[in-house]
Structures are given as C-alpha cells and as structure tokens.
Length: 335
View (cartoon, rainbow, N blue to C red):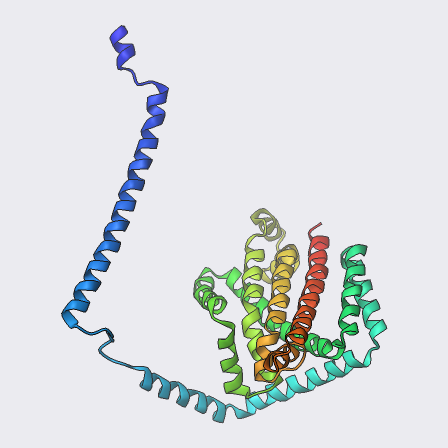
C-alpha cells in the first residue's frame, strides 16, 4: 500500500508536466530561431567574400519593360476612355462647385447653429456646445472659407466612397469567395503610403480637385467596405433563420433584416471613412485641392510655421467634431 502511494504521481507533479513541456518548446523554438539567424549571417558573409563586391544585384532588371508597359496601358485608357473620364470629371466639378457655393452662401451663424442642433440631436448637449465653439474658433482665425471648401471636398469623397464601398461590402458578406478575393486588395490599400493614391488621380484626371477627390476616395474607402462586410456577417444567424422561415426572399432578408441590424457597424465604417478623408486633405492639396490642406501646404512652403500650425489645428478640430457627432449617432442606433 505504501509503495502504491509513493509510486502514484501527485497533483503537483502532474501540473508540472505541462509547464515543463511548454518551457521545453519555448527553448527549442528560441534555439531554432537563433540557428536560422546565425546561418543567414554566415551565408551572407561567405557570399560577400566569394563575390568581392559590395553591391549585390539581381541578374536581370525588368523595370524598363514594366515602365513602358504601364505607361502604354495608361495612355491607351486615357485616349480611348476620354469620354468616360471627361464625363466623370465634369460631373464632379459641377457638383463640387455648387456645394462650395452653397456652404459659402450660408451665413456662418446659421452654419454654427445647424452644427449645434445636429450635435445635440445625435449626441449630447456638451458635444453640441463644444462643436459650436470649435466651428466659431475656425472662423475667428480667418479659416472659415478654406474650412467650407474642405468640407465640400470631404462630403463628395465620402458620398462616393459610401456608394461604392457599401455594395462591395455586401457582396463580400454574401460570398466567401469574394471576401477572399477582396481581402488582400484591401490589405494592400490600407498599407500603401498615402502619397501613392495621388498617382491614379493625376494620371486619369490631371491636377485639380477631381484627381484629389479620386485619391481621397481610394484612401478612405477600405474601412467602409470592411465594416459593412463585418456588420452583415455578425447578424445573429437565428434572426436570419427566422426571416427565412417566414418566407423572406434573399433581398428582403438583406434590406429588412441584415442591413438594419448591421447599421451601427456600418456607421462605424463611415465614421472611419470621414476621418481618413479629412486626414487626406493635406496630401490632396499637393495635386491642386483647395481648403485647409492647401493652407497648411502653402504656409509650410513659405516657412510660416504659425499659420501651418493653426490650419492643421483647424483640420483636427473639424475631425473631432465629425467624430463626436457620428459616434453619438452610432450609440443612439445601438441602443
């Protein structure tokens, strides 16, 4: 009996076995990682000694051929699709011009009052007061007109991003294949430097507001697509099954069940799209977009740090106002 008790492993020894196994795996993993790093360093040293050249280059360079092919493709698209791009450009210019005139035509006290009422309706009284004060501060530093131009560019960009992003997000939510297809594209778009988005705008529409709007749309659209897809996929399956059991069609399920229940998540995506569109305003000024971004860029070019700081702060104030109002709307829909 005593031998059986001594030979039986205690609870503490049983608990120690997984811990020892985990520590052993960690040590083996670290050892393998160190071995790979040391091997890579040794191989690199041996290659440099054997070749005796500080600049190791690839054996071939396809850059000239790729450059020529890309230039030819863009030239073909611009020449053959001139009617299409001109139509888009004219439509955006007309819409943007009318929206600018409307925002500048409205007296600033009316605009501040509207901001106060919207913020109070969708958020809280404190946010409404703070938003009104923020808008008045923008006017007090003589940046009201550039601010209205920035809002006009942002509104057009966000509307285009929503009209394109939500349908793509719905397609991704209803098809696993489409989600796998679009996911790497969205990953690439969200990791790409913001300056890169200016290239397609310049190539297709040249310098000006239209190219800046295209760059802003491309930069700001990924959150709208991702969160639309996420919101629809997170709808409770039991609710969808209940809709199917009552004889709802696929479109009825989408528009009467899934989208209404996904509204808070979709609105969070739109909120991020608005924030990214405002963040792009300074970069878009490099291709001719007006507004606060142009004020920042012009002041930096003239080494007027104070003006650049004030204009940049105005962009931040506008971003905070839009963020707080939209967050309040999202919370109201969630409750």
